[in-house]
Amino acid sequence: MTGSVLRRKVIVRDPLGFHMRPLTAFAQRAGQFRCAVTVAKDNQRVNGKNPLELMLLAAQQGTELELEVSGEDAAYAIEVLAELLSAPGQEGPESHPLPPKG
Image 1 (cartoon, rainbow, N blue to C red):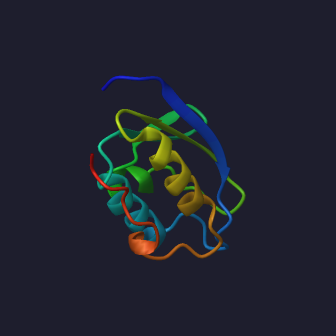
Image 2: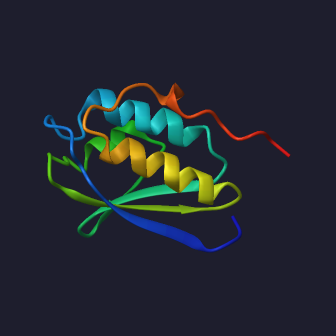
């Protein structure tokens, strides 16, 4: 992976926290990007493309997470993924289409 690491702090806004449905949608959407995706809470860092690792964060509503992306499509990925993390009622990964490959 080349390029710099982009970081963004995001507050979990879903009243149920970052629970199974939104974290699975997040991991699926993150997996569609070519860049590396890491989500951190305090000293804990996990692979943002792995829903089981994301569950370990146990992020409740109001939790601050740090999203880190690096690689080819990182600039687009951080916008889409930060929005998914902070959405009050996250749904499916299809709300943001992938940019054209080129």
